[in-house]
Image 1 (cartoon, helix red, strand yellow):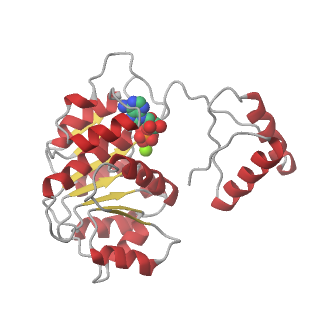
Image 2: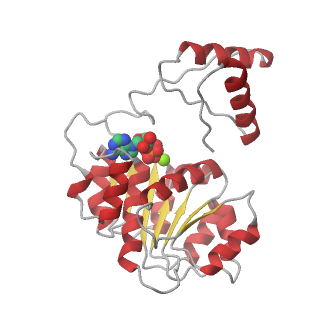
Length: 285
Ligand code: ADP
Ligand code: MG
């Protein structure tokens, strides 16, 4: 990731509590995409950034988002200043978790997660009471934008994470509606692992003309980092668990990520593999 010597986060013009949080997270040197994006994003410019999965895009937008809030903090009731849109609940939760870490040394920045499958009423209350940063999936966010409870007229920064997937998952119309309703004089940052025609369309409709296009994928077309090996086995359904167990046992010295299609399936496999196979496994999502 850092063959060249990238600068340290300390060299950026960012607030002390953010630097403290980065230190606590064990992060000091920026990744390539962070080095390319952060100075421009921190000056308030529109950004379109394409970089492989695992290259550190989350902090490339969370750090500027937090600075937007810091610059606008006052003693009044919080207003929503930044919205981060993710294509899935799982990605939204992941982003929200990193956000919580990065704002952990501030006691006056508020944030909330607005995703499907959770209580709409509780979410409405949070939005009505005022919250600085909203991390959301498009469908549920648009639901709330149609109500009076959510005042979004002060939003000055919009992030579209995994923008190509937002379209793939059928949120095109929701996203269009969201974008037309938000204030025009906002900063917009769009992130994705791959370039596609849909992101081109989004750039046209959502971004300012002097947008910075940043792409750290130029060396090849793969959407994942070089250190990441991906594998698969084609087998009968009844052998799936057997093969998964075998592959995990074989790779015990490596960090392995396994994706499942539903939360229930994650919970089942987690329980089975930790309880009966003695494997050390964490759940995300
Ligand atoms: P992406 O969104 O590009 O797929 P993430 O933002 O999820 O990537 O980051 C991937 C991993 O890299 C995470 O585990 C994150 O903690 C780690 N990471 C991010 N920035 C840095 C950094 N500057 N130095 C070391 N690790 C980092
Ligand atoms: Mg990401």
